[in-house]
Length: 125
Image 1 (cartoon, rainbow, N blue to C red):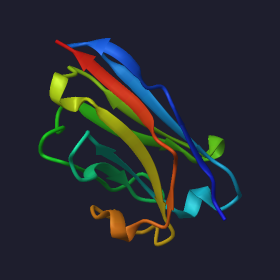
Image 2: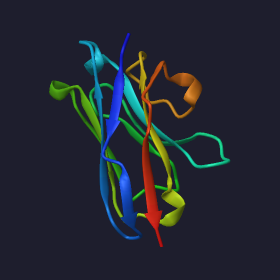
Image 3: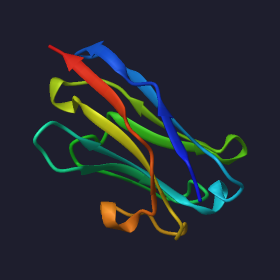
């Protein structure tokens, strides 16, 4: 069983930046692909970014390309999401997810096996 804990969310003005972190328990983090999803009120959970087990492959939603950067530090069992140039439409709960099949990145929530509780990101205009 893997437990994921997100941190780093908050209230920020449009144009600002945040760095989200997700720390995993267990010794198998380095073999997992990781992802970030978000869910705004009244909307479905949507893919944001993903990274494979060694960081060689990443994928981003079109809406965040050029503004968000996903990374990971396997020695710290932690993945990150650097969010720049925040927009009000980025407001959502951001979820960290882990996928046992680590070689490939996944873009669907159904492809992930473990989830964190989420961290709120609110962007004011």
